[in-house]
Image 1 (tube, rainbow, N blue to C red):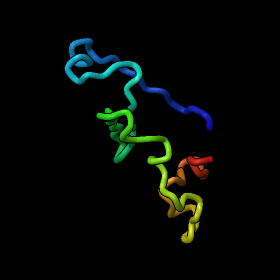
Image 2: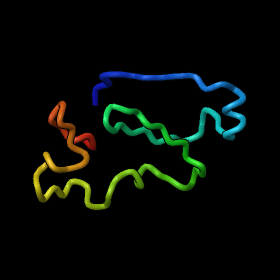
Image 3: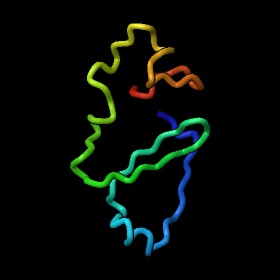
Length: 80
């Protein structure tokens, strides 16, 4: 997968301490209506990479255009 854009920003040290996060804290990022949302995972064991995808991934009955993992911009599946 080619990286088209990379966004980064710094959090103040006191905010990181208040949220009890560090460089190893897992996050989940998503985009909706042009807004990037970053969720800080509370418990490292709560989410695994497998949790990010449904068990029936790849079984597109309605075709890829209707799949939540289909990118309408590049026309490819984001799982591949």
